[in-house]
Picture 1: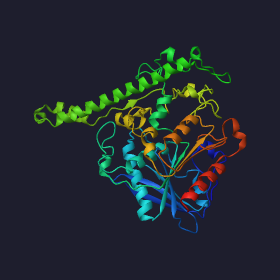
Picture 2: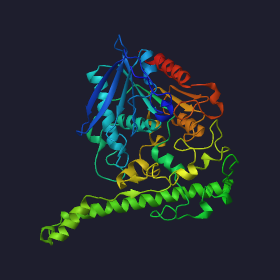
Picture 3: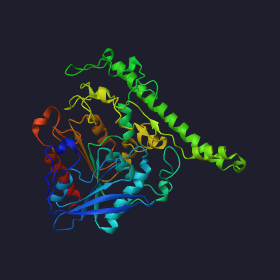
Picture 4: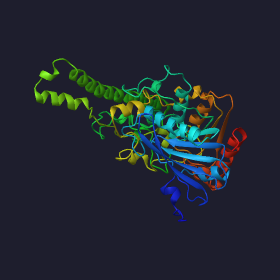
Length: 426
């Protein structure tokens, strides 16, 4: 079997390096109730069919070779890695469609494979995704989300959502919109110009406390209050832009249904029909500006300066790649807005009652220790547990001020497999 490159953890931080070739792997094609296709990989031990399977998924990341999989199989469990319809593409992502994908995966595991117990592994963005799924799945039809924040389908009351039995939150963030709310650059004054800045709110201006490492950055407490308020205000402005674009398309659809539409000149009808297609694409500049990246006294932990996305956020903040940079109005509201998206733990986690394990990474640069503690407090489970992994970065690699402790993954997976075994024997 070909070996993974020595630097695979840097190049592919979510993936395992190698797996026993005797492990049985099955490629699964899934069709959601709306007919859209997603894919999964089912991993089984070489010599037995377990009773319990762990399902993992992320809104857009490829989890097909998730680093936890070899550990689950070695411990006697099955593992199912599902990639959604939005794999590597969150520019048009509606979280409500993701729930329909998950339903197809869980139904396959329960009905076609016959697993008795299903444990949801919500790693990173998978945490808020699975929490949203379970919260809606437990509600009777008629009480679920009937339309995404931007309007239109899907109506979740029209679908069946089979439930799972356990939940692991692993280095999980509070929601993509909530993460972006914390990292969006409050100094932007013109959404069409990435360089238009309010110096008084510039996180990376030395007059506001910023220092290039190894010098230490410290932000004034009152300035931070103003900065966080300005982040909130910017998200609200972008929400308003998104809703305005959606309203334009809705007005065009209403005009096309009018009794006089057919009598309009051909060029006028074509213009209305084009606007019905809602071709607006929003560009959101500068989304890597969280004060916690440089001021390590904020939410103190084992982390070092920087973000999981870049060691130099003050420069990468202007890069073409970044969170939520290119989105449709509907995707912004459903996924990236910290004010409008329903896919957040504060909304959903209190409704998740199945046994829940919450695990944080002490050196995580984007999901902070206070986030993890809040998740534990928000959990509605009667059987819940909180743990932290020392010397671990967001991807559970050795990182931070205690990186000398070595590879955290064996320590992490001992915790995860033992907790799961106690409740859901393989």
